[in-house]
Image 1 (cartoon, rainbow, N blue to C red):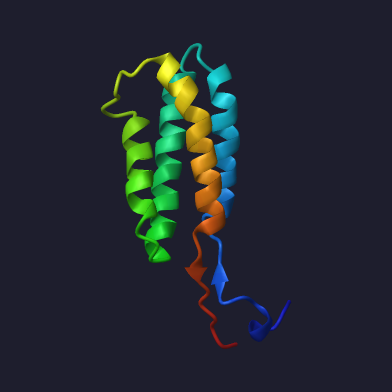
Image 2: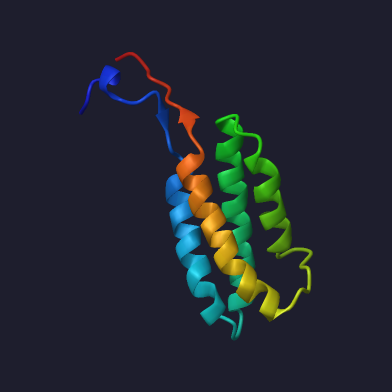
Length: 114
């Protein structure tokens, strides 16, 4: 295990959730039958809140409104009926947004003495 002084002063906590949801969003236009659109709404909305939380922790406030818009658009509780065409076009845009957020959002590393 590297010493605490060898670690960078920040960590990218939003990267893993962003990669997961981006991969799902790139595949989601193929999942338009059955209950998949509802599952997609839950997945995207939950991950938008998670990535938004990491942006809040990292004090990168400009990501909060972006993640809020994504969470509202894919909200499964009060769904906006924008049509399959909208979500098919918006999914890759949201995926790229998540990827950029995952790379840019950094939270300070908390080093505890051992």
